[in-house]
Length: 301
Image (cartoon, rainbow, N blue to C red):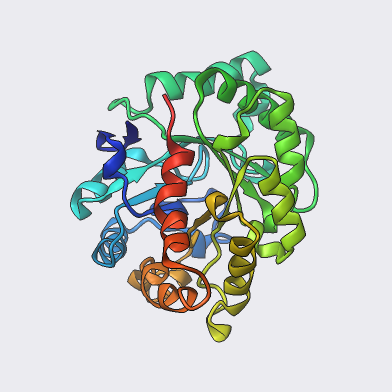
């Protein structure tokens, strides 16, 4: 069974899944992050319907605590578009962590995360499907290390999957080391944004730990038709890592969504990108990345 904002669903209902997206976001620091603000529910519904019409079934919204997370709005979007939407507990990198977190003891922060996972959030008691942690570019701050250590212990106790933010793809191996030291099961950890490094050796080292990765900046290089990412995926498949790769767009900005007059749109991976990537990798490998692998990572009791 999988947790969604509309309730539990069974394994075969998850279908085509994007493991890292944003449907509703309201960052605190405006106007700096105005382009990241996705607060028009009707536009989000329209974007999700295009995803559904292209064959999509499930979206994991990675908007964490203190970044405008709103599971009740996600429930409205999911109901209107008739798709599965999941949300997360946990925290972003230090820049976006709430100030009140500094006042909590490690035990209190542990209890906060555990309470969200076991008791739910909002008056509707909606249950998160995964937990997020994040790190800064090329380094992990002390506050981020603290969160990772606590999150690793929470994951060890509950089994909840983890989807992490690696700023510009960096610090993935360091995240995994800290998580493992604190008891996390790396087979249910997926590192985001590592495709941005364009470093195959680095990505392979992450996969060799048992963790998974998401190519989630697909659609950002339209002028080259994502040729570099397709080349990297081809090499990773040939080297035996297709069972640890997920695809997504992380399209949490107006300029990426057609409903906000941006491009390429949430359906891009299932339409134009699909046509091009299938010239490089087998269809079975592509299906693993958008169906089987997310289903395995997100599965827990």
